[in-house]
Length: 418
Image 1: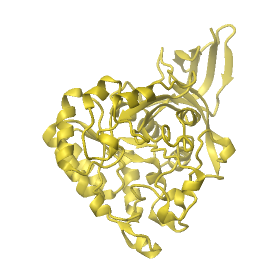
Image 2 (image 1 turned 90 degrees about the vertical axis):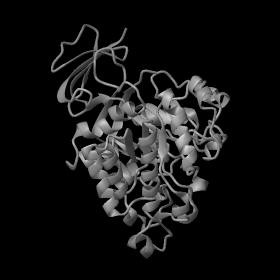
Image 3 (image 1 turned 135 degrees about the vertical axis):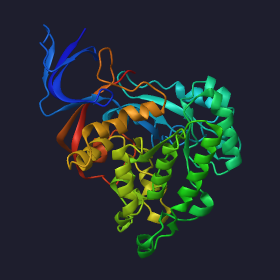
Image 4 (image 1 turned 90 degrees about the horizontal axis):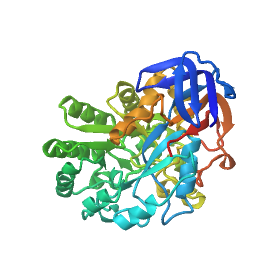
């Protein structure tokens, strides 16, 4: 038995509204006591944690992996290592692999993966449609019985008749459902959010209506079916308004935004950095501000990482032909902390809620917390600096606009229930 006493850390736990300095005693990683001050048991290792933060493990609603099919981008092992380094005790992996996780055998193959002791627990979404292509419904009940976390294509389901049938069929299963509202016919070949900035940069525009038309239809389908659903990748100010109106009408939806859409907007595309080629595209400045405010007020329930790894060769191309996405599991907490907590825009509890307890609730899970007998917690130094270099990252991929930057804030330890 190993006992450790973490003294005078800042303890942050949104499940209890806790943000105070105190001591934490753990036994073999399990929390056994928490108080403003604790006496060190005999033979316990004592850690001076002044200036450090202890909080519940983070939970990511959706991220992507290359395994199977594109293991050069990311393997399940490297994904688990990256998530552990970033403080995520649970990560929900999208079925957007090759082949897609659209049948019980393929899901069983993913579930055979066992991360190292103490590493992030990987959970797996199953595809709603065959090949995650939005055409033909998968064997949902078989996937449910095989251990799917829930159902999500990771791509838009553009056929509204199919979407309606999916919601009706899934209603009695009471499993998490995540849907991306986008109308491909309206998005067209757009690679930047439509507006004066895209026009100035000479980038084909994707209008906000490609999101909002689909989102309005999705919300109506949820209302008529009564099946709760999560709206992923909200990226526009009007999208925020639609979510707010739906919640006010007590339609059973939740919503998330990716961390990149909180940090950047279309003005940041002037250098045509392919790592900022995202889908949905970065919003215009007014979209970014609406998203930031919606996270603060709770209209947006969660911040998702949407970790999207690509090889150097795939991403080191012109902006217009680069695949969409960026990595983020190792970078999100320190960068969001510096951007929004250090600057006083949000409270620490607000950020931790959007990254931990709320994502868990959207996944219909008990949130991590700093309570007795719990073992999902992390130790974070918000002041430690490090360089986001390839050799310092656990991910196999390095497609990030923060690559080579100095990052302030580092997770020193993650304790997972795995």
